[in-house]
Image (cartoon, rainbow, N blue to C red; front, side):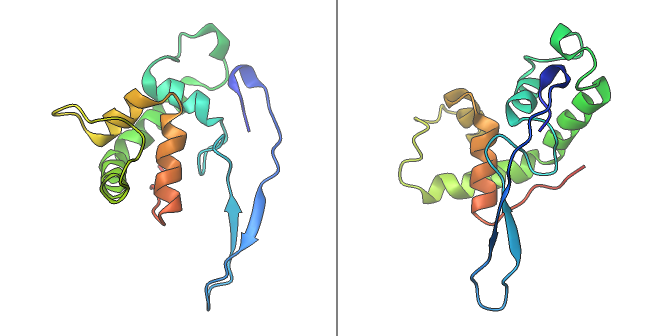
Length: 137
């Protein structure tokens, strides 16, 4: 996993075999610190998507590069409708998701973003644990 400033941290990724009859595939159990198909920590990606971290940030002079920041924003925008759809499904099937009340006119994604700092990890957990996925770009 890559961190800001070019630091690298190695993680052990647990693998489990599916017990569904006829499947028996191996699945990687990614920790909340990782985003599927991304090398950087989810906190760093969240900071970029929130606008807290940008190309002018002195901690990120070289890592990640401007093009990577652009790709993350593009990836998020390309998956925005998919994210809203999955969050809507989960939100309406869970009696109390623990995110507080929605404000009139606010999307479910905005409500989740407002309610917790680790909103990207929470959304990814909802999507992937419910059998969904996001497209990589």
